[in-house]
Amino acid sequence: MKNDSLAYKVYVELRKKILSNQLVAGMRLKEDYWANNLNVNRMAVREALTRLLGEKLIVFGKKGGYFVKSLTPEDVKEIREVREILELGALRLVFQKNSKNDLKKLEEICDDFTNMFKREYFEGACEADVRFHETLIDLSGNDKLKEIYYVSNIPLFHQKLGKSQVHMKDYELTDKEHRQIVTSLQDGDLAKAEETLIKHLLRGEMTALDLSF
Image 1 (cartoon, rainbow, N blue to C red):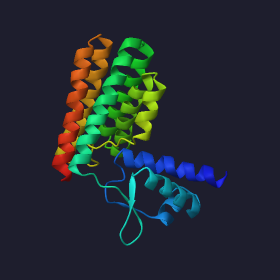
Image 2: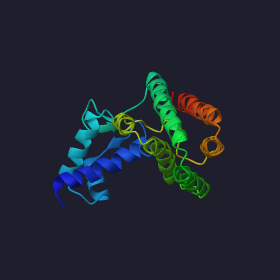
Image 3: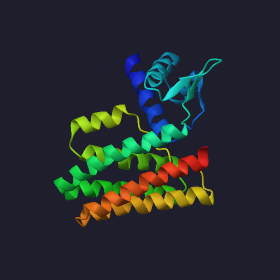
């Protein structure tokens, strides 16, 4: 496998973990650790980190090293706003398509999320959460919308890894809201689906602010 392919492998894995909040704000990303963890050379890790740095998902520390970028309250607000704009647009396009197969895909992701958080596999639950929203965008069928969403590197800012009562309540509410969105689309109730998505994103913003700042 060529080094650029290895670098892309590392990039995809780290990007996924950052966006799903498995690598939390302020965490240092060490080249040797990820080289060993992903069975690649350090050059591949360095190239991946440079790409993530360019995409502003990580920052370079004052004394050296790469760290996952921390979110300010303004960052969280702007993330929620852009997600609302893009995901509501995708929701309307999915509704217009009215494809049972598309809704089935979303329903299956909901099942994955439920199973994972109930088994306390929180990393997997967070990845399923990200996948739900990325799939909603993908099912819109609009390539420009998908491109904008991807390059925006929109993180999952409300889900927290852990099994405390607060965290478990967040997972339960996320599960309920995802399923309500799908059910509303299945019932032909776009207004309810939109209302639930907006509520879901606003709750994410408030939870992130409460738990992080």
